[in-house]
Length: 392
View (cartoon, rainbow, N blue to C red):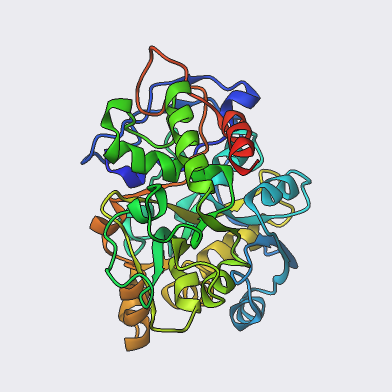
């Protein structure tokens, strides 16, 4: 299976959901490996009704702005009420309050919302802009499509790349070895992402450099494999200058605290200095993808559907992608102007070969997503505990 299809799963074990079948990691496929998950029977809207007066949206910063929200209100009469969240965990908790109609869910939140019955399947016939121009790599993915039902309308995606200061790292790196190996010449100046999901980055490196461990999916680690990844992270910990969040990554590099490390394309771009460069290393990388999801008991579902359609149009989806800094979901945007083409080229928007080397964040579960049935894999709670030993 193409790696990009193994998108974020939820903490299914924690809610006692039954799984049958496993996602495969073999390259070249176009399905999610037949993974079946029992989910609550939430009804799907069959037709649209009258627009309500408002829509309440939970969103990442930069996804809902007056530049396009005001026009939506003028077109539909739906006033847009926005609340910005800082993490996927926060988004999940807020959606569970029932106070919001829509959420821009990343893959490490979306499946949790589906399996807990917090969001409803979507009738894509009521969303005309969810059509042929949506890039294929963002359709039908495990993180927002289950059992034949679509739960998420794609917004954008991105890879977690290797950023470096070319004035210090004078030989352009092609491997993650510069951040993982104990003899790295950049020890003490290495930036790392501050989250238990970063364990998957270590696992990707081990997949290539310690094949005897048998890791074929960085989100499907048995106890021994998790232990190996944890030891690699502890080794790296001695060399890390900063564990970053989106708010601190740019200053870590521009301030000289870090000269190499994991980053996002938009954060590398935000440094606004040509000496900072980036690469998707030969081992591949982790990544993220976002989608609009509608609350199971949305108070304003008609305005919610209208918003999902409106923001899936090439121009609006492009505005969101450019504002946030990611590859847009609607490929037609890339042909609207020279600026749009430049943006799409920078973020590899329509390059599925590029994204075939990206493992989108997948919250680990007890059942092995790599297809193994003879062992139990570690879950996110195990990863959280392991991460605590790394950070000390």
